[in-house]
Length: 592
Image (cartoon, rainbow, N blue to C red; front, top):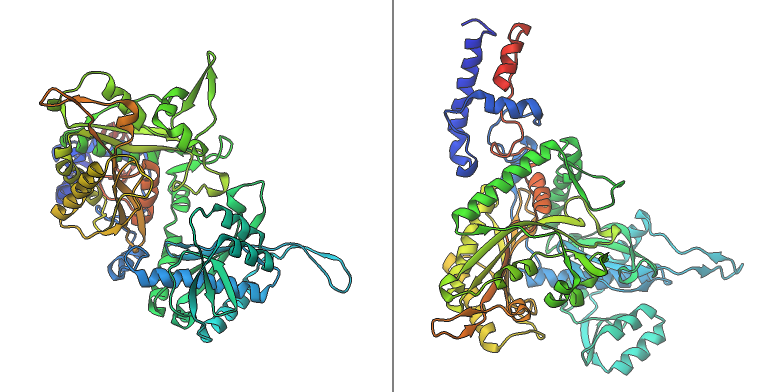
């Protein structure tokens, strides 16, 4: 066989087809490449897009990340480890006390625990030089300052102060706050609507308004498993017109090995940052000239997104869903009917005037589906109805909160709504969980943290419908055999829900999928069906998303595989390599 001849090119094509057959079992049926397909189908994509350098067909992680994936052990989370949550909450208080010891002018605001640790916001006012009377600018915390704070924290931990809870009247809390000159605490006190007011004290040295929980004493905190990480700016209450605060981010774990593992995970995360890889691989961009938080999909990223969406659509159609489309804007009255204008207005863009009427760009898809349901009289025989839509929505986010693909202003939800009878609910939830598992596992996500959230204090709907829906969700999880935790009172005001977090290749968790019962929108829109007895009844509505949004899931996927996509997603699956100019024309012919 002559090198560079058409027969040689055919030989290369045969080898490539063989490789595809070997990998085909991993490729979703909806996007499998036919084993009898010509090489030209590969070459067309290959001639358009350059793939990151790698020869492995089914790689899901970059070579230097593969060992990390094999070695990683699941770190505990706030949701599944109450001791860890207490450590982080108490560490936040100790850090605030240490900051005020090191810098007495500091005023404290809020200091919650977060996914991987905690933070605390501080206000540093201008001060006066006691000798000269000159104004001293407000302190800007430095890396050296953080070392000073950590040293003070270690001393506090070493003294093993008891951490105690005290209940006081609102008047007493106000008196104590004014006594120590903490104006931000007064605002926090005003926002607390329940009584008595609870405070937590560290010995008799320091206290803060707090609902808990905490460890018993500062000596219970593992000081070698606590690390201060960074300082960032944050406006008080997120309001740009208010004071600029300084936020100290920190992490805390139960023991030093966990902290070491977390630091290693963060080092690996920097290599996988989707913003860096998105630019390096030419997948997407955020064009500031067009405005923050708006995503531009480049040809390579668009090719991957198209495969994701095609697979999603085929999976839903095969599972009994109908695909629908809805407008991008609607009359403001629709959002008043749905309640979004009253309860979600801060997350919506301003309205536009059209022929003396106000129109709103959509922040949600669900009201549109409710209108479609209401468009005709439904029978119990018609239910369940399953409608799915890749619907692009727009939500206002402050510029300081925007972050790559993870938090944007315009994004595409993989939205679906199910309208069903009460007795159908559990089967429908099982179906949603089955589909969720099928879709996520295709992308290599097969480890989940699951939370069942139940009825909050303020809610709509009868006791019976809440109880029945909660039993249905719990029953569905048990039928799946999935472990889950219960967040008592953590449900939405309109119904209980299941939230699912996925674990990536380096052990991080990401909130993606959600399944929510809704007793509110069917009532607001007057949705009905005719029962077997001929009476008008209200259906149960289920909101569900699997990816959450295409943009955010894409960012997670990029970081999970470190930019080295599986074969069926890779924008380049094969490249034609002419070894001599004599076969250039033949290569172009094959590429067509």
